[in-house]
Image (cartoon, rainbow, N blue to C red):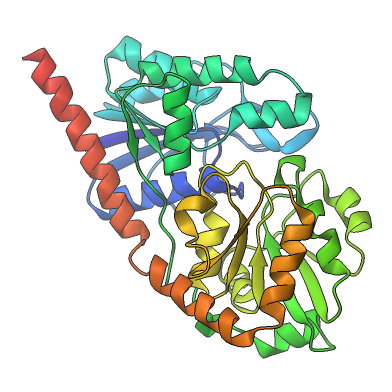
Length: 376
């Protein structure tokens, strides 16, 4: 099968869309399929992929940084997209988090009569509300137009599927995300790193993710004030200066990836996610795979991932006191922390990228079969 993956982001970007697109391309290649990735170029990059070691082609489209958030790149109009889809002779177009480049990919797929599968990954309506205080309806009109044109939309969680259905998007199916349980494992716990992060033997509470307004990381401020607790923040983004002021005593480690990130995850005592707008929340799965108990808001993707009281704790969204109370509860109960960590690890054991990648190929196959049936 020849698959063109049109994605709004791709490594070296570090975010959920980029990571999922990378894992999808890898899995397709391993299964003997032929992926092509089309993604925005980074600063100073040309059309060639900066990582020449990839065993599949990656085409970079000229882009500009998003005003106020330069880590996000917006692809410019380019004829390279249509030319690449035609030259690849794609059987199916995979649209990863389509909004700008993905919307153009959808238009091109329609013109070339190529089936398209659109993967919903980002709560753009919520982002518009957070950043601009308006524009949520316009964002949903854009989302609805792109996804309605696709042969199938894949939602990462039941909450995301419900949002899509509520906004009139048809043909929605569930497709979760995988986790690398070999990389993210309790065996990577590092006593030396723990001594560096918490030299007084404090309980280490970690956050991993973008440092941006929609993540609400400032909710960890009361946790910083708890005795015997050290907050560790991993990631970067536009909110970092404000968060350094809002979280006194917290350790900021910047962006970490790969085995280094896995070592940090496994060395935490608790993982606290604060953002209420997650369509999935990959970092929750990575913490669970690392055997670390999770505290997350009872909203969006975490509702599918955290079984309250068994694999972690769910707290009311945007409630700083509730986050601090959950940390205090687990700080005082090592046995409960251990039980939650073990159960979380067991819960994600079968959620490998290989397993969910095969589910994705099944979605492609069903879409192609439906197109063939209609043509006949």
